[in-house]
Amino acid sequence: MPDELLERLRRFQTDAFPLQRSLFKHLVDDGQHPTTLFIGCSDSRLVPYLLTGAGPGELFLVRNVGAFVPPYDQSQGFHGTAAAIEFAVLNLQVQRIVVCGHSHCGAIRALYGEVPAAAQNLARWLDLGREAALPVAEPGPEVLRRTEQRAIVLQLERLMAYPMVRDRVDAGQLTLHGWHYVIEDGEIHVFDVGVGQFVPASQADNAGTGPYQRFTEADRLDYSGVPMVDEGHG
Ligand SMILES: [Zn+2]
Image 1 (cartoon, rainbow, N blue to C red):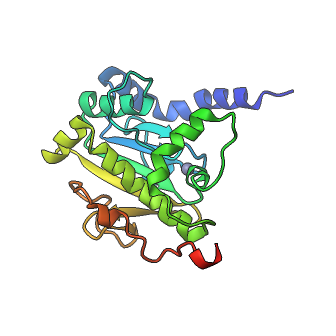
Image 2: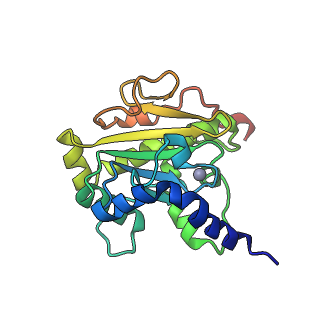
Image 3: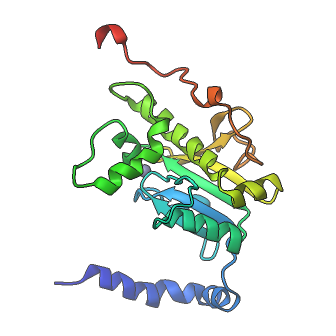
């Protein structure tokens, strides 16, 4: 039986690698100097290199279920995403942090349902998105989309609680970008802090929002346009 994955590995070295051999040599000799920390959902349909046109050496990637940012709590756990944020900001001195969620996100949908009993780590991890969930019983497409977007803003807020992030944002050395990728349209919607909304990239004048300003609680909990649970009918 042919091992297709092995075939692909061999093809990379024989076909793809030679085209970029000098670039990789440069990145080895000079080290990596990525300018962007990209925190994205693990979803297989989200392909950061395709979306940004980035090549080797440009993106420092962290991916996890939901594109979540854990709180900066200094507890002694194995905090992979937090460690990556610290490394990217303190060692690599990235200039941008992108938090990229997407449409049809299973993590966001799971906020409204059950996860398997055996998935204890997953259940705990999803807590990082719960604040973004809306008070509806049966989330339709619009509620899910708004929840996906609210979750992205929530992660940006958590990022600002990392001292090394806040210091650099305040100093104008680092910008935070909230992106919502709509898979079926092939379009990123960029969070605009000024208007408090996600703007399609085709209409946005900036890939991000400049220095991130903290939202008030009222802004963040704006449920306008979202159908609520009808109390009268359960
Ligand atoms: Zn996802």
